Amino acid sequence: MAASRGKFSNKFGFIAAAAGSAVGLGNIWKFPFEVGKGGGSAFLIVYLLFSFVLCYPILVSEIAIGRRAQKSAALAFKPLGHPNWSIIGILGVFCAVVILSFYNVVSGWVLGYFVEMLLGNFEIGHHFEEYVTDIAEVGGYALAFLIGTAYIVSQGITKGIEKFSKILMPVLIIIILVLTIYALTLDRAMDGVKFYLVPDFSKLNLNVIYRALGQSFFSLSLGLGALMTYGSYLSRKENIVSAGALITIADVGIAFLAGLMIFPFVFSQGIEPEGGAGLIFMTMPGIFQSMGPSLGVIIGALFFLLLAFAALTSTISLMELPVAYMVDKHKIKRKYAVWYSAAVIFLLGIPSMLGNGYSEFFTNFITYVGADKPVNFMDFVTDVASNTLLPFGGLMVSIFSIYVWNRHKLFRELSHGHPKFPRTFLAKYISFSLQYISPPVLGAIFIITILEIFFGVQIF
Ligand code: PHE
Image 1 (cartoon, helix red, strand yellow):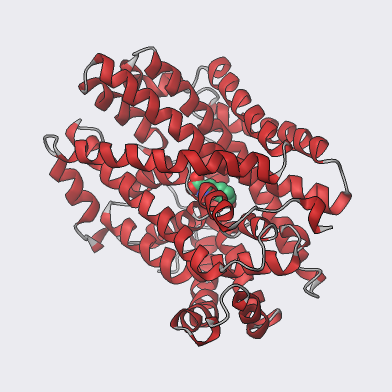
Image 2 (cartoon, rainbow, N blue to C red):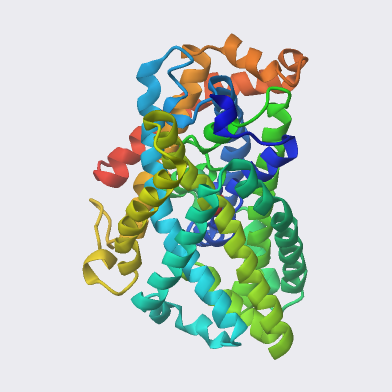
């Protein structure tokens, strides 16, 4: 049935789509505020380690599993001879729906800020907290964004996803580079750079490790089968190992650059780096304002517009998971699967929308045992789906690919498109990490954080 499922036309199409999935709000909105909350450089270092040592090998396995099976995440395990493992794929579909429900809300904020920048309303930076309680407005933008995503996904693989990814990513990188250079010329910029880059391990604790791990998975679109699904559309002529490396480097590189851009801006305006989910929305408008009215409008609108496109290539890949599942498993028409998913995702997103000050209940949603402050609904679902379940999915992928499917079959699949692979250094690196690093590290963090963070059991 492969033909009717659609295919990427070539390697560049796949890399653009996979990198488009990886690069999104996770890099430019979430990464900086997580760094801010996690004490700066301490978070950055742990994040870099996790991304390269642990996540890259899992990313390669995910793509290999998807390509071998020629099925989307939830159905990939059966053709490999292990139908019981489908539960991991289904868990991934669940995570995608949950993550997309709040991701879409933030995408709506981005769209709203794009319009505010066009109108020259730079003051909006000081009014983020009021802005997100205007439910009619943020709800409208979120709905518009979701409809855009659904429309593209309903158009199918090659026509929809590739076209958008290819053009816009490079433009976004250029604009961030230019803004980074500007950032570094500002007063107090160096305080920001210091906060971001000078190692300070006194800030390191379990919470930082937990969040940095979740961020690595989230940012690489890993642990829920998104790349498995994209891998299923990839031809066997292509080299997964090098494509995976490129995706990882691009994703981490852009997050790193976003941090280098944002912290000088944050410090030069005297904003608190611990500001949380509003960080870029509070910081960037003031910067555009400082460029003068006309340049500020142009650069500001362009920045939020491109950010919206970066978010779109990620929401497309998130929506692809429930859709591909329904199409592959239940033979539902793609169009119906798309609009059905969109409706569920929108409804699920409502508590995230309300939980930023509008509704007391969703704003102070839950206080973890032993914590002193409650977290809002969006933080709670981030903790469950992204910080906990994605690394758990990654743990399962590493165990599956080394022990269950087994290393020889993984290596054989990776050799398609790269015949010399088994004799390379990367082969040793990947199998060592999957075998000796992922299972103990991910397993330990999973158990310890569930006990400590969710149940308040004091281990350290
Ligand atoms: N990686 C995307 C980002 O950083 C988010 C995402 C997560 C997309 C999981 C797909 C799957 O914005």
